[in-house]
Image (tube, rainbow, N blue to C red; front, side, top):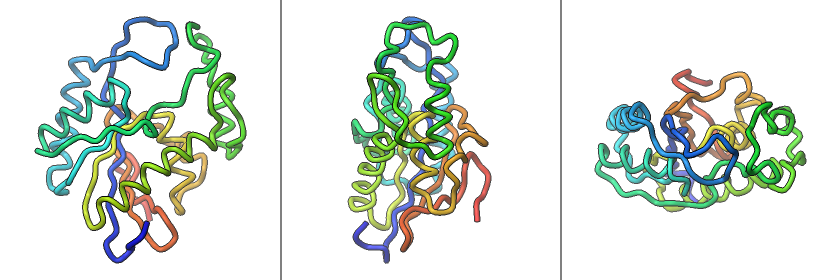
Length: 203
């Protein structure tokens, strides 16, 4: 972040409710349900007063659809970045997800053990690094502006509490994000600071 005199304001949102082609685990697929489409339009309406300059999105379909619907309300363009995708399923691809194969790894990340890794996929540290890279790009591109970022619950709850100086690493465990919940971030001299999480103001 090169100019803290003009800090960016970033609203990081989880995508809208999604439906999936199969119950089997995969790194692709998923599209918005009718409710998810309504949630996405409402997301744009809720942020209309913030004068959002652009919407940045994960490349996964459920996120892109959310971003496009919100951007349509806001009248701005969508930028897609790979670094905002959900964490990968790795060796669990093709499994049923019951019981949850990510529970222990995700719990380790939220407890601060970012070296823990989804077998065949990435570590928590790698998730944080790629999300951080995109947020830094946004901060440098949109100095003095507001930006909506559409990503995924796992990626947000892993990365944002680590990057925000006023959050504990396990904040995402205590307050998981529902579809189209928003975390408001702002750059300061120390890096990122969370101003609110899913509607709750933060000090």
